[in-house]
Image (cartoon, helix red, strand yellow):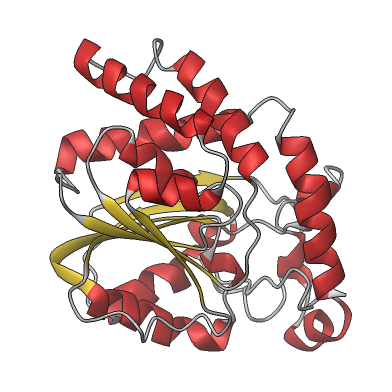
Amino acid sequence: MRNLYRRLGNTVGNKRRSSEAMPSYYAERLKRMLRLQKQHNIVSNGDCILELGTGWLHWEALTLRLFYDIKAVLFDVWDNRQLGGLKNYVRQLGRMLNDGFGLSAVELKRAQSIIEEILEVESFDDLYEFLGFEYVVESSGSLGQFQDASFQLVVSGGVLEHVKREGLPLLIAETQRILKPRGWAVHSIDTADHLEHYDRTVSPKLYLSFSESKWKRLCENEVQYINRMQRGEWLALFRANGFELIEEEARRVYIGGLNLADRFVNMDNADYECTVLMLVL
């Protein structure tokens, strides 16, 4: 079932993303990264970054590369790359850069020039050669192949919520190990019930009402695994592995009279009402 889901996702998803309008949050992700870069000087020319769960479009690394001469390792547990979707979204982004991104004439010219080159590539191999990127698939999700202090930045968008709960402590510890001293981690974590992405009539935090046993019996699956980690748990996990929180941004939703399962009942409102957690560490 998982393999079928992935094949369908790649085939149907690539066809859709090759022609659809780019969702607005893709541009918002770049605006946020540019703001963080100007505030904190996260990367410099020549740095190497790691994008976890690089997915269909390599969006975080790709868009940062428009403005900085960075190298990137694009890491995933399976290959779901979509060149048609990547080109379509990059093309649309190029039309938006004049407005709302706060770019100088030099920055805009550079980004547009790179976008033109990206739109001409005929394969991912061509893309990686042009950008100086490396694509790595490791089905176990282990970062053990990377040396200590290899990266200036580890970044992810909508990825960590899909990592097995029991494997998270090791993953976060490994990201600390492979980061350079005073290196950065920037993560956007979708803490909403993903059912709500497909059915807008349900509560965005409906999964908080399921006990562990009921969740495992009825809902948890390998096709689209969700670890149900909440805001406070994420903050504690990063803190336990030596990360310093520099900035937190959270989107919240009122969950009304939702009956909470025992695991969640004693959490703060800020934890169980959080639907997207954006961390700079």
